[in-house]
Length: 281
Image 1 (cartoon, rainbow, N blue to C red):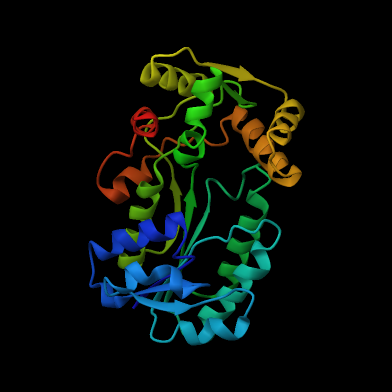
Image 2 (cartoon, helix red, strand yellow):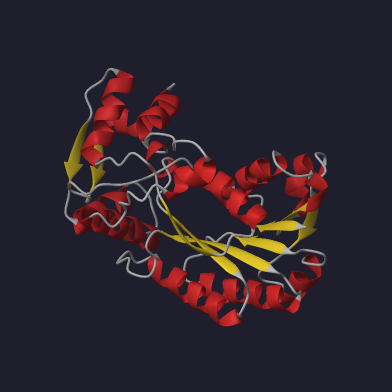
C-alpha cells in the first residue's frame, strides 16, 4: 500500500489525485489528523486513517500494511524536526520499505532559513537506514499567485529578490512527481524546479499583461519588506521567514535548470505566466 502524510493539505490532496490516476484507490492510505475531512476521498475508495504527530501512539498502527510512505513536511515551523523524527521512527518500526520526503530545493547548500529543518530531517532519514527519496521541491507558483489580486489592485509587487531567478512550478507538478517516485520506489535525491525561471519584475509583467493594468516590482531591503508584511497583519515570525526567503532568492537560491521535474512528470511544468492568467481569470 501507498501512504501519504498530511493528506488533507493542498499538496497532499493533489498527490492523492495523482496516485488515483495511476493505481487502485484501495491501495492508497490518506494519513490525517482529522479523518472527517477526507470523506470525499473515502468515497472514492481511499483508505483514511488517523495519524496525529501530537499522538505518537497513533503513528505505527496507521502504517499497518503500508510499504511506501510519502512524508509531506509539516507546516509548524520550529516543530518540524521532532514531528518528522516521530514519523521516521514509526516508519522504521512498521517495516516501511521506502520513504519519500518533501524537502527544499538544494537543501544541503540553501541559505534560506527554512532549509535548516529540512537538512535535519534529511539527516534523520539517512541515519534511519530506510530506502528513501529526497524530493527537494522549489517554490510553488501558488506562493506568488496567492497575492495576484491585491498586487494588481495596488499596482505593485513587493519583495527583496532583486533580479534573482526563481524556478517555480505549479503545486500539481510537484504532486505528480511525488506520486511517480512513490509508485516507482525510486531512491535518490531529486532537485525539483520549474522549467521556466522568472524574476519578480517578470512576475509583475505577467500580472500587468493578464490584467491590462500597470503593475511594477518594488525591490526593498529585507528589513523594510519584513516591516511591510507585518503592517498588513502577518505575524512577526512568518513575516521574517517570508522576507528572508525573498532576500535569499536574490542570489538565485531558488533557481535550477536541471529539468528533473519535467522529466519525472513527462511534460513541461506549468509556466508562471499561465498560472497568473488562471489566478486573475
